[in-house]
Length: 52
Image (cartoon, rainbow, N blue to C red; front, side, top):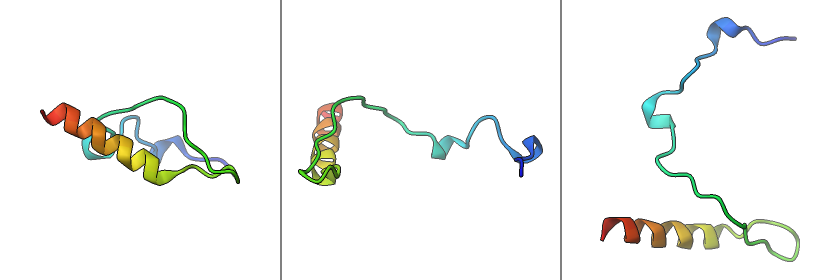
């Protein structure tokens, strides 16, 4: 089963594209899951720096 190229858009809509992309180490728990609360804290801290 292939995907038809006819229905695939080259560029997504403007509201679907992220405004910022941050690369870095992901904090993980002892079981290997990503600590999402740490990511949220980082995002809030980054937003505060951009606003001020």
